[in-house]
Image (cartoon, rainbow, N blue to C red):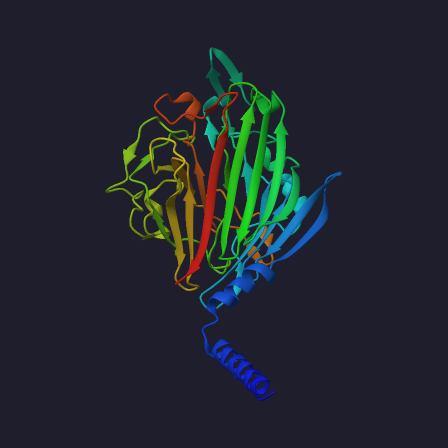
Length: 382
């Protein structure tokens, strides 16, 4: 009996020692794990766009970051991230109601396809066949045409990963849609991670030779729209860019950025040299001159007052930097007027007009192949 009592006392002392150690030991890993696995919140709504219904997904990772994604247009309508003081604010332009995106001439927050950016005269050749696409930017084709992927209704479902929240969308573009050849089946995945990253992946297959160049058209303002983006600091890891003509079609040459207002290889305030670029920045920056599956950090955007830092990672050869030149003040949301330079876009992509420039990386997709394109936005503070 005495031995039993001694054993019981020893066990109690051991338990007290464990409890004492547990209370004093660092809890960082455990707290992070709890945030990653327990604090996820998701809300799915059905919203009307015209006479159809779309799903609206609101994802909250419990770490200060939220994103709102619509199955209409693959649109990111809100992106809420914390500043250095932990205050979370929306940092993208967008309409108040998803129905308003039915007339989204600015492409706020939209998935862009089949071909992002411009194709001269809306025409290209494949295997001796000439294809005429819809022209919706003067005489040129822009961002997939009159009814590109930014205006289609995707099939969409929510999934939960171990440390992330996932919205997976699918859409099959029929042969001839907007003039493109081939039935193109596309999957678009949005993934919000517990450590404040937003990951996008496009994957497509076709039954005929065609061209593909997807991107995403978020308009970012890290100040939370308290000021324009001219005071933001931008870095683009691109030694070259593609000069354009008066209609913003690449001339076909690659030019070094060194010694020009296009040199963002080290951090530069956007407003410092924008006056030297007629019309503002709307140019393709060449990070690498060929396709590869390697993800690279293409750009960094920093807003000093808030401390917000956004890194853009992608596997594409280039990124389009657009400084919001065509924002014209006709839209006011929550008291914020969307005037020129109110936000900017960083759109990872294949080169504009690639189907008509043999020296550019190809945009061709053949049957039996799979097109893949990854875009990642990493949000930090400093």
